[in-house]
Image (cartoon, rainbow, N blue to C red; front, side, top):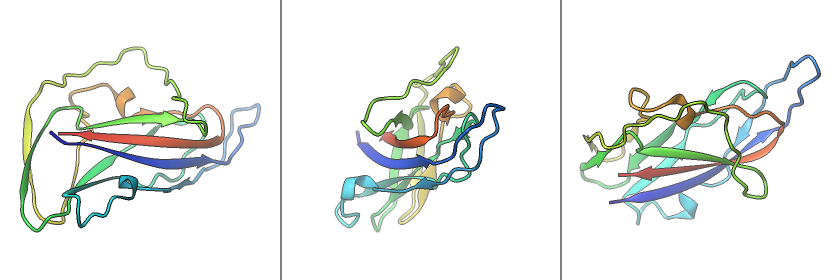
Length: 150
């Protein structure tokens, strides 16, 4: 079993005025794969570059798993291939409002990753949006931690 963790930063530099209007926000990628040399690691995970994030507007986080080897690799995974956590500048988790968190993680999927190819799967049909859709209520700098488990 592999578990790979990636952390990137989101910079929400906009402000929301009293009428609720907010301006666009850019996200900046700070690090990926914790600086691991991809020539030594068979897999790399990345988070799609997040742009146009607005305060109080939901956005999706999408992870990819890349095969860095010269051979195909078959992986088995569940609905929780990627899990995400949003943290503030101090590293404290930001709780998301979710009425119901539903996931069926014991589903067994399998796929083959060809050399150099990337694979995306957020489990959209098997778990609640709250696992990959987030809303930030305050402008600021946040970190997104992605974990791939397969």
